Image (cartoon, rainbow, N blue to C red; front, side, top):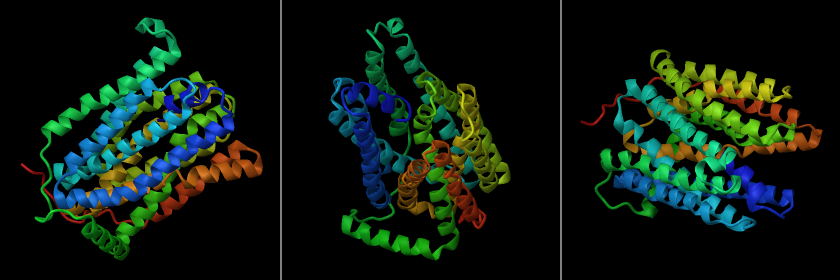
Length: 395
């Protein structure tokens, strides 16, 4: 999503199409998929809680994402309408599966181990994604080593390899994890779940601590997501070569593995808020520095800095939220968290685009993201990170 698809969409699937048209459809595809998940996430989470079907729904959405990702292999050059349509389906599968994946965390561990386990999950994700991405990059740089005709064939095969990898590493979870017990003995009904969601919204409004965290998360994760999605585009805008941008993404993946584990330890020993403060201040400083950079070496330094904190901010946000909600309604509440996550990277890119267009300077546009981090940190200051209630892992 961050590396190959944007480049391949412009350079291969959109061959012969005006660059502004391909940019428009890529933006529309991202926004459309995010909007659908925005609507679906809390409803699906509530249904999963009441029916005890987190794992089954995870399997359904993961399968949608896997099949869509594999389908990129068959999309011909110039067939950008097919590419963007499949991209939307793949994002829905990926994002939908994550709602249920995240919601399983409270049932798998104790509150005292939340931060470590959440960080371990993210860290292994960075390691696994980084290993496969490294192989895929080598395929595109040296296609002959892999018996491929050219770089275009290598990228198409890369999408197929991602689908196979995703399927294989979903099996331990699907086969080895026990399903969370239903919270209701009756069959889940959509109308009933809408009513429950409305009650949950009212409940969140009455829980000042949870409300403050959700406001903080929505703001700062928008900044994080904006940097993730806009980094390649920003690098290209200031004239950096595409190879340098790909190498920078690899740096983030591999540095993110050990760094996220360290943040898990920080959260476990000193609390999630302190870990988040470290990560968010690093984002503030890195964003300010990024507005001044002009070379590939500086872009690599930025990648290292973000790799050190990106996974920590993501994992500690998830585990802190898990401490603040009732475990028996984790799917429903994590549905709201994922909903806010999908609403993120909407405000940030809009700010960057408007400020850059108004000032005629992409660097000033990037600086506008600082507002999101600083406001998010202001709300985070008001959050009490005391766990809502103790919970125990199932036997």
